[in-house]
Image (cartoon, rainbow, N blue to C red; front, side, top):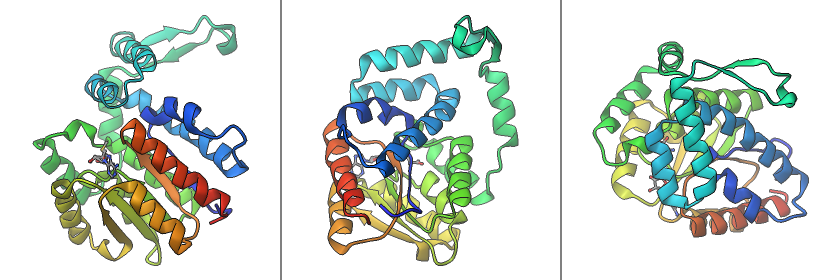
Amino acid sequence: MGSSSLGLHHWSVLASQRVILPQNSPKPLQKFHSLSITVTVASIATSRASSVRCHRGCFGFTAFNRKLRKSVRGCATNPFVVANDEKYGNKQVISITPQVYDYILANVREPEVLRQLREETASMRGSQMQVSPDQAQLLAMLVQIHGAEKCIEVGVYTGYSSLATALVLPESGSLVACERDGRSLEVAKKYYDKANVSHKVHVKYGLAADALRSLILSGEASMILHLLMLTRECIRNTLNCYYNLSRLGV
Ligand SMILES: C[S@@+](CC[C@H](N)C(=O)[O-])C[C@H]1O[C@@H](n2cnc3c(N)ncnc32)[C@H](O)[C@@H]1O
């Protein structure tokens, strides 16, 4: 993986990374791992209990999710939490309450086209899977800070996070968008068109691992892997491909 590569994961994959990543991961993957934690922290803060349930079903990381559910429940009821752990110097920390989250949502910078996509998706099956506006803003910001030109999204659904990414990519940039569900992909494509970013998005309909394998074969250059929401087996296959990409130095 080249020097301009950046790896991010959605929080729910964090537990699996420990199991799947090779022990002697090359440096880029170590960077990838620590960056995921950044996103994880941000995402845990804004995840809803319903999505926690969904992820539990998908991945079966019961202990991890039990902990997470507990923290989400705690966040919803206690505006302030005193962290007794010495590590935090017994400081008072603000947790996310519905009111704080309302404030975040009211102040997030969400382009009009993303708002429309979010509203259209709200009535669709699986809408709880969609990333939230604040998560998308964080992703878009990281793409911009990093000056990324080539990105991959594994798991597009109706396209919210991929559209947020495509909107901030430069005109010369490209996003490989992998999704196995044709119906949600149709919605995504409609919004890429609407936002005039279709030329930046290379849609790969089918299993992500296949798309990644073909990227390896074609020797595609540096990229961002920024969302991975698959079954455990798919994660294993996909990460193997990703690991091969980094070993090849692409
Ligand atoms: C959590 S959703 C993605 C949310 C999306 N990034 C958004 O912003 O709305 C996960 C998506 O991954 C897709 N998916 C699951 N396994 C897959 C695989 N093996 N290959 C490609 N897509 C997959 C599902 O169909 C689903 O649409």
